Length: 236
Image (tube, rainbow, N blue to C red; front, side, top):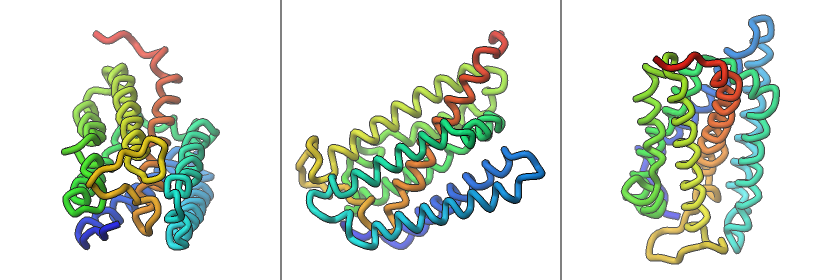
C-alpha cells in the first residue's frame, strides 16, 4: 500500500481522536451524574484496549497473509458485530436517551474522513472507488446531517429518512470494500490500488474506530426512532 502523505495522515488521526473522544463523551453524558466518572473511565479503558488490540493486529502483519480478504475478514466481522451488539445493549439504550441533535451531529466526523479518503485516492493509497469521485457516496451522510439538524426536533420523521440514507450508504461502502479487497470472492481486478487499509497501522483505525462509530451511531439512532417516532406529534 502506498503510504499517505503527512497532512492527510495527520487529519485522519485527528478524526480518529475526535471520534473516540466523542464516544467517551456521549456515554459519559448519557450516564446519570453520580456514575459519570465511572462511565468515563470504563469507556476510556475499553477504547484503549480495542484500539491497542487492533493496532497490534495491523503491526503484526497478520492482515497481509494471503488471501488478504480472509486474513482481515475476522477483524471486520468482529468490528461489525461489536458495534451492533453495543448498540443493542444497555449501553446503546443509554446512548439513545441523548438528544437527537447530538446523535445526528455525531455523524459529522464522516465529512473530514471522506476528504481524507478522497486525498488517499488521489495519492494512490486507496482505489478511486473509495472516493466521492468514484463509488463512495458516504459524504452525503454528514452533509444531510448538517441540513436537517435545525429541523429534527419539529420534524422527527426527518430522522427516519436520515437513518435510511445513512445505512444504505454504509451498505454501499461495504460493497466497495468487498469488491476492492484482494482475495474476496467478489474481488474486481483493475489497475487501481487494492484496498488494504485494515491491514496497516494506523489506517486500521478507519475500520475499528470510524466505521465502528458509524455502525454504532446508526444502531443507536434506530433505537431512538423505536422509542420516539411512534409517539411523535403529527407534523403540521
